[in-house]
Image (cartoon, rainbow, N blue to C red):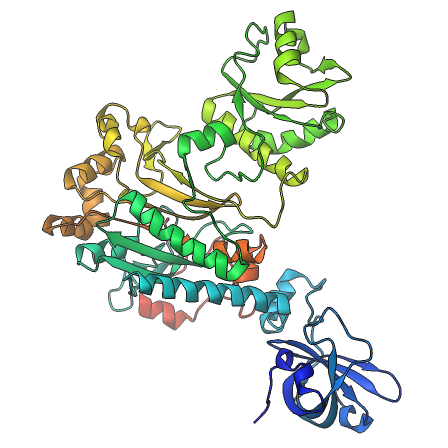
Length: 572
Ligand code: ASP
């Protein structure tokens, strides 16, 4: 036996009792006559008192030890620790495993480079903050399993070696040795399989599913990630969202002790763009967008030819200098090359580089009905969607920078009714979600005449400005599915090759069905208050998709390639 208690279970109740503990040495502090050891296990840290120096002669940080000792009241309690009012006077100590000098100090506060931490991830994982994040992640899956089980869902695994799935990212490919020259794709999601499970009559499915997408990485993206993947039959959109809200309520209650008010707000996509300039708005603060054509009616600005939109920021005039506007424009111009302008009211005057294009009536409207002293109107000109998205990005940036909301609060809403298609610059269409998303009944009439107007039964759950999950009702009528494929420009040949087996299944009685996938990492990040996805994955890749520990991916032996019938073309 190594222990009778976890570190943080020892309390005043055990005063003067003998306990046995085990863990890693966080620090040793020498006070002459005696020494202190901070002993770390998964539960936390406890202070050990060593009176016999011989016991710790050769010990150092990160050694694994087990001790026997007597629980004692501390003279100076450490209020930061759960058990900071007690300590353990060590009688026996045994070294279980000696640690070499670690490449960085194992502590929540660290200045080690992230690549170093990833190279020695097993040391990094000893840091309490990472253990806390992984615990939250595990709790979420626990709650998901229990909730969905209570609601008649079956957990079913789907294959990793499969045909390309339709999420639209680049596939990871796996060469087949047995069928040389052929490749499996690793699933970008279990989308096709979960729909086939519905055709297979399983009615309610879920899976904690690995998804793999070969995309350029960002701080919130990894090549492999996990979805809580769900599919149901015979539910309408409202029923499905209500069922999912129940799940979110349990997660937030149990993990964050936060009571969600249900039903969650449902905001149609078009309104989200109009009001917040984003399909994943953070609605913890206002800064609502508005149209400005009426206010600026009669302007003579030659470069304001298209839509004019903007939003007002209070008490910002003194900060919003030329330099500040230049800084905002660095971001704004990523979305819209014409960028951002400002009109502010300072010392009772309207100030703006655009003022020369305004007549008295415009100045009066701005003064009387629009701007208070200290207000800044940030505005731009351009095509509606691009302009709104640009303003939305600046809105989000200022919301964060000006501390317009409580960073520890939670804000959840559904964004619904996404357009079925996105129009590419060359005029062709792609799916906004994926090609199996069902058009709204009232939009069916637009499928032929104006596909860009077609709205769909697609929804995202948005939490604190992040898309934490998304899904849709699916098409179950072959005629509509074929029409959608046609609009997407897929030839019969393409359809057969990509989805033939899937489309064939629809011939044999398809239930109305729909589902959703929550990003497990996203949910964990939100609940753990981190914006780095690598903080919630035990063994993540770095931004170059490299596993710093093993250095995967690596070249393989010539013989392995030969087995697969593959030759590498060397880049020069
Ligand atoms: N498979 C979809 C995705 O990964 C989610 C869904 O439609 O259920 O975005």
